[in-house]
Image: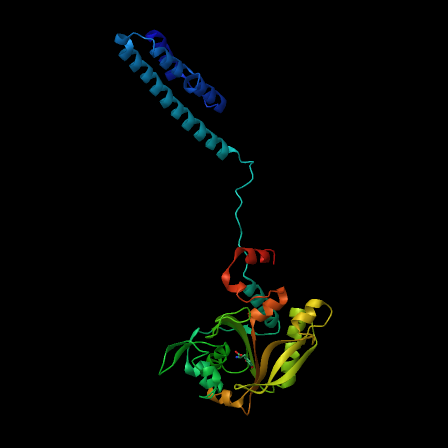
Length: 337
Ligand code: DAH
């Protein structure tokens, strides 16, 4: 019996293969329920007591050899299959999940493109502003509600440092540094201390436009906006409603005629067909004076719009919070755009 075990030990130690099937057969032959090892353990019961120890030790040696061999064979076969995989250059590549542009950026870029085509340049400004650039130079009087603690995130007070509440601050910075003619577009993030809901958010994005030159008129403003709405929405019918902004005089809200062709049109225009898309006006001479531009010689217009609002319109999104949650299920839908 001992001899038989010795023989098997040689066989086990000499066994070699990378075939998964052969390894499995080897395991069944030795470690299986009716395998060699269990057979020996059965036989052990009948071995005379004085030989039990020797015989038992031999079986254990064989068992260990089998387990070591099985471990080695498994390792060798899995690493050999990795090598094989590496070598198979015809296999499809591991798929890389490409990202997509954020819808706010898609629309921002589109708007910039439209205004660039008629000579506007992009200008940048800081998100942390002082009172002068965000309020005072824009002709916002002390008592204006936008200065209220409710609306503005202050970082420091006296002198006031705050998170800009609109991109109009860039107008002031740019006019301080540059001579007319000025034709700029300034996109960016703005901050307001507002409750978050489906329609409003404490962080959002605006695009500001500014044109200062000799003889700029209200008609130039209207024509520019009309060009813009035609390019962006394919809609050229607009109306200007009298409005008020401290930094423009006269001021207007621009409505686009969206139409009433579908149920959605009825819903988003509340049955009127018209949609408000931006504020605008002729730059108030007081603002030009604040930045040392001669208001006798120069005039200009300005406009400002919320990018979220326009994006929600274009893509029929119903909740502004979607832009900030970064839910893959939302963002993925913009992959091909
Ligand atoms: N700054 C305004 C706001 O945040 C938007 C705006 C309106 C900007 C009229 C302008 C403008 O330049 O002329 O509500």
